[in-house]
Length: 425
Image 1 (tube, rainbow, N blue to C red):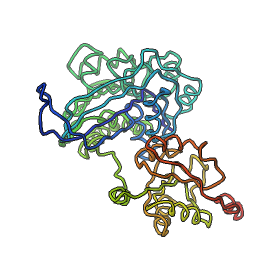
Image 2: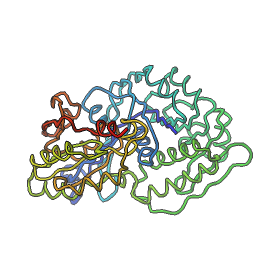
Image 3: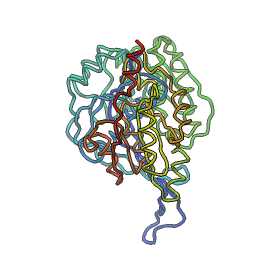
Image 4: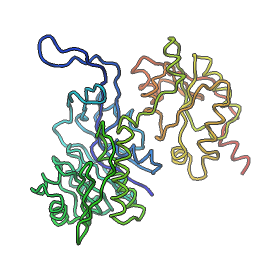
């Protein structure tokens, strides 16, 4: 199944710290910052969730060509086709003890995002589409809406956005959104009225801890939610919409898809919400940084390990105090190399790499290029093996942001996975 997530991508930043005093000039808390956590938000967050579920997903959105847009691009973990936006929205939350103190929003632009023919082609090629609207204008584009009316869609609306295109399989407003669109705060009435107004096959109104109400003809279906502690509700709506879309795409009935989506959203919140999605840095990296050492990283598929790999990894490790291998996931390898690859699965490749004396740790990434995982690791040195020009590698610009450098170690001709497999064919 090929899922396309189309909608507004955002840059979310959590600035975390402690509060022990008030400003001397105003009754406002002073946040002593301890960490900053950027992440891809909006439609890009929904696409990330689908990818981490093992779904073949492509993101269709619009990005700006400024610092914020470049930073967001480096954090996106999935393949994407992007039009151009004036500026991407940046939402910065100031947080202490798991609670948001304030949020600062900037960007978003006034001109509508650009929709390209490539974006339309990708949407048309999808087996199923999740329209993730964050009210920034992309889903108002008439050409895009025309295409969306021709494919099966789950539509996650926004009160500042347009109504779904007619015929969507499921629309997923929360109660405030449903009230804004329908004019009634009664979830049963809102679901029934919006289903008729939008000409949707089904509408589900989500109610947070009270579950959801589904209307797909006949009597409404109430779906209760399990009781879970909620420290940070951010991202729960995306988790709900992604699960519902994937279940419908795989043939589930609407009530079964909604029940699974309610359960998935509750589980997501029970594990900390978006904060729980942060993959921790390898402990080796933290230890090396604490003692002022040099972190080296390299990346690739490392499908059939051969002498060229071993020599390259040894050379990379010699450049610093630890070596982290950024490893393409199985889905990523398949997209890059085609069906039949990888020969060795992800777990086997991790085990073999970790057995090498030169490798200190392995992190897996699901996108086709390593920019996002590099943004998290922030290595001092990024190493490529082969006949590359380091300055022309797309990762070089990413690594330069924090003062890192990109180097190329000697290329060992006659050793490649492709050549090995072709000799065996």
